[in-house]
Length: 193
Image (cartoon, rainbow, N blue to C red):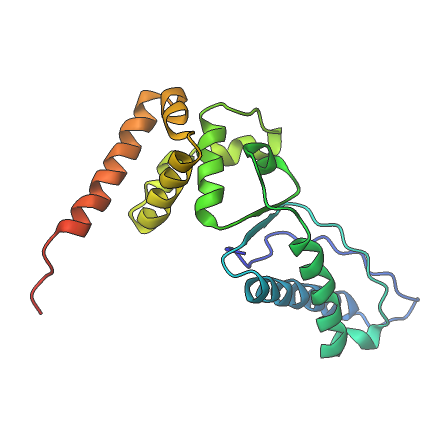
């Protein structure tokens, strides 16, 4: 998983009257730690795999005392990790709109995002906004290796030409400039020490 942060967490805690007022806070901390541990387990078991989770409903029944036990946290993390590892790796851009999608690596996701941007697939509304700036994001100099890997992946699948043909001219020019910048940085002489 590339982004281990939990951006939004909706949590319902059912407790008897008079329960510890800090219970909700403890439950949120437990859930966040379990999700972060699940992310680490996925990376251990499938290095490089990228799992994008937009919505993941979980139902746990835990005693209040379990919220402070590493064993319960580990059990919950294991169940999340296994469920996410069981998600099949995406075969097409339609996966971009799913609540949970798995990609072989970051380049795989970028290639599918470029395909989607090119109009090969109409994604669900939730993914459209994310795809609007894919070319600009991919051409960020910090992503130069991912840019090349995504284009190479499209080329190996005989999709590069069709994808580039379907993209707006500005996007194609931006991609070309990104590739050119990578090529120039690779051929530039090393700075003297």
